[in-house]
Length: 205
Ligand code: GRF
Image 1 (tube, protein in one colour):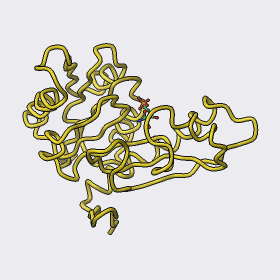
Image 2: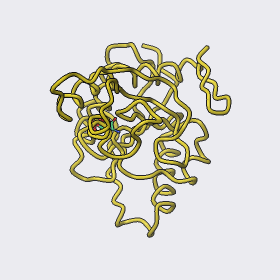
Image 3: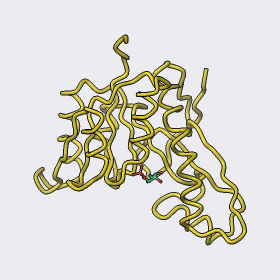
Image 4: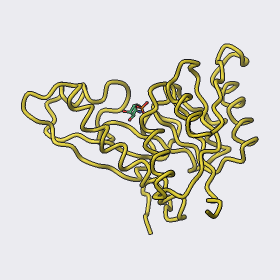
């Protein structure tokens, strides 16, 4: 098999089901990338286990072990990204805010997935927010990361209807299935060099 050129880092804090979807797409041959490294700020993150099972380097980077402040933490992340020659960073359930230190080193090369149709319902508990608002449709968004929380240029979105009698858990599960579909697709578009950022818009060629 030819060595795929895109070397991907995934930053995750927990369960890592999106990481798993990315791994599955790589193993199925629908995503031409390789997992260069998975980094977590949580020692117990299931994402680290998933990385090891796939045979990828898994790094627990303890926030208490770096100098205080988000920038210092991102500088430590950057060292790992450089060491592993990373070309794209995918945040997948990563519960820390990324700073300029990382974004300046990886301009338009940091992606995130969020469980709502942005710009609606940014931040935590997006599925509950959609329910509480009475939205009839929600979904998920893959976007490039900029300094604001969940604000960057949108790459891909998928919609999910909000059903009668819906709970946050049932909505979350149906949105998650769409996340697992569109995140690997968005990364594949990047891998093929088909994403161009023009202001707020991402052109797909
Ligand atoms: C997903 O819903 C993702 O959109 C959000 O956090 C959750 C992470 O789930 N940013 P997992 O760790 O990928 O299973």
